[in-house]
Image 1 (cartoon, helix red, strand yellow):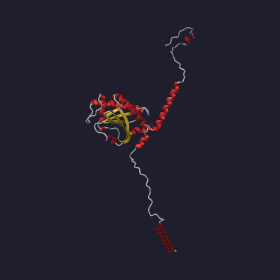
Image 2 (cartoon, helix red, strand yellow; image 1 turned 30 degrees about the vertical axis):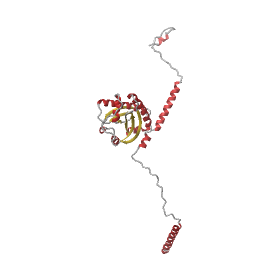
Image 3 (cartoon, helix red, strand yellow; image 1 turned 90 degrees about the vertical axis):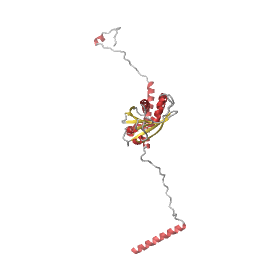
Image 4 (cartoon, rainbow, N blue to C red; image 1 turned 90 degrees about the horizontal axis):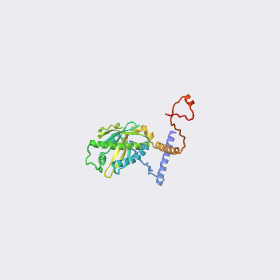
Length: 289
């Protein structure tokens, strides 16, 4: 029986081979393999968190827009010339990588944003600062041929400019939440800047400032951990709710202005005994306080 099974198996195999060779001769079998279509491959940087940053802090775009308009008007008025301010970009980077962008001297200004915990920083390019200082003293904003250390007078002028920028930044934040921004410390050497751990993530927002004869950038560096507890209020959904609430508040105020109310005013008061009140006659005068 075993031998008979083996013999039948060999017969079936020979029949399969013959059938296959016959099909090839006729052309019924395609020897070329069908090419598999490969799906499009899109590179993805696992270290990039810009998309997450945009989704979590989408409402900050409203802050940037208000800040640009407010600072443009403020600088144009204080410097007596047309100054253009525009938003450039925002991204999430390591703090140590951010500091590598700057050399000594550069204006590093650390500030607080209450009620947020921690400190943030505004960085101003030295070429832009020298031009702005020249404008403050009546010049046209000429740049220096060689970057040098800031003098005491220039440092005071820089502080005035930074405070003006921070006031406008505080005003822009009111669309989301009322905050109090205050300048904490200044530094010129990036090696001495201690804001957060070098490997901590920070959100960097870049704005450009342009005059007729100069241009430059300012950088806001806000630690990610500083915004993390506050991110629910920085979402676009929460901003929509705030705008809806503000709209209803305005309508309610308009309706209340047309409401009739009764007002009772106290003209004065005095103290008397019960017997004195019982003895009062028509024409008596009650002296008030």
